[in-house]
Every structure is written in C-alpha cells, then in structure tokens.
Figure 1 (tube, rainbow, N blue to C red):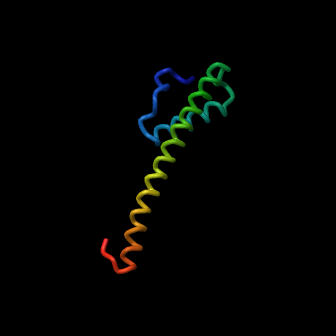
Figure 2 (spheres, rainbow, N blue to C red):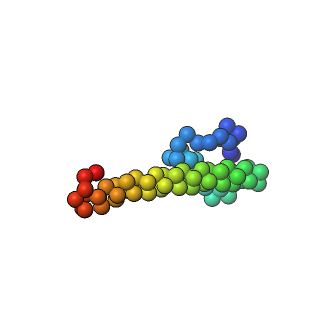
Figure 3 (tube, rainbow, N blue to C red):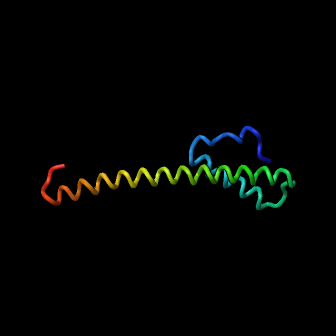
Length: 82
C-alpha cells in the first residue's frame, strides 16, 4: 500500500528509482486492492515525472559543460590560450 507520507518529493533520484521499483514489484504481484493499486499507480507517475525531470536537468548540465570544454578545445587547437 502507498502511504500518504510518500506523497512528497523523493530525497534523491536514486530514492525515487528505488521507490518506483518497489511500486512496480507490488503491482506485478496482482494482490493489491483496486484503491491501493490506483494510489500506487498515481505515486508511480509522480515518481516517473520526477525522474524524467531530474535526468533532463542533468542532461542539460552536461550539454552546458561540454560546450565549455569543446569551446576551450577548439580555441587551443587554433593556438589560442583558454
């Protein structure tokens, strides 16, 4: 059963993934009452969105970092100091 205290945002990406895996496992057992299954599904969607958002932000940070590194490498190859 999904408890109300889990309705808050997870502490980390890893925590969200762990909770999502537990929800999937519980739903795969097919022994959840309908209301609990719906609550678990709803929580899972929230966790999935959190994970997607976190990954998207990390991806954007990597792009920004790569642009800076790539810019410096191009400048160095052209004989310019970075």
